[in-house]
Amino acid sequence: MSETLRETFDRLWTLDRDVLAIAWLSLRVSLTAVGIGLLLGVPLGSLIAVLRFPGRDALVGLLNTFMGLPPVIVGLILYLALSRSGPLGSLGLLFTPTAMVAAQAVLATPLVAALTRQVIADAEAHLGEQLRSLRLSAPRRAAVLIYDARFSLFTAALAAFGRAISEIGAVLVVGGNIDGHTRTMTTAISLETQKGDLSLALALGAVLMGLVLAVNAAAALLRGHAVKAYG
Image (cartoon, rainbow, N blue to C red):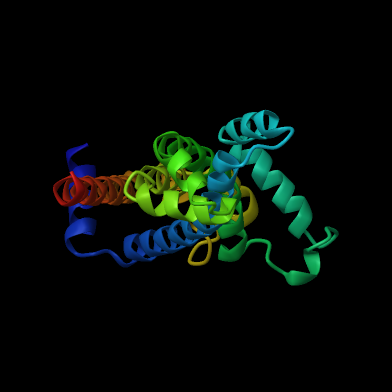
């Protein structure tokens, strides 16, 4: 165990090439997926919060259900769609980082939408009557509420990043865990543990924890700044 820990620290201290490459790919894929999730989920969740229409409660329930989508099911559906015999097979996206981004985006979007809906619904309870008195359209009311609750919405972004960066099932199915091409931190940790290369697995685990802690620290600082500026 002591030898394994020494090798782990050596990999981190010397900025091991394999560790950096895997960490960079994981970060790039997850940030892209979260960006897509925010672009789709924030407007969707906001509009659901401010609009009243038949079936709205069912849609909210569906969003909440999709928050717990099994990653392997998402991976399987995308695999079938992107395989050579699938409808999107001609694009040649299977076993590429793009397919991994798509898988993580599918998981992140309903999570962002559901959390955004709750945040905007709370904001709408305080400001909705005032905004309606100004005769603003639903999209404009949603935009105002998004701006008003923008710091609270970082919670949704943080939750989406946490799910994306730690995901393994879907990216393993559509990415294939190809060395130097589609190997992320989570899939590499699983593989290297099975192979017995515990130093690499621990080094990647340390980087993964460091990224999550850094994002949480940044979010806490931002919330603190918002409280001082607007509180």
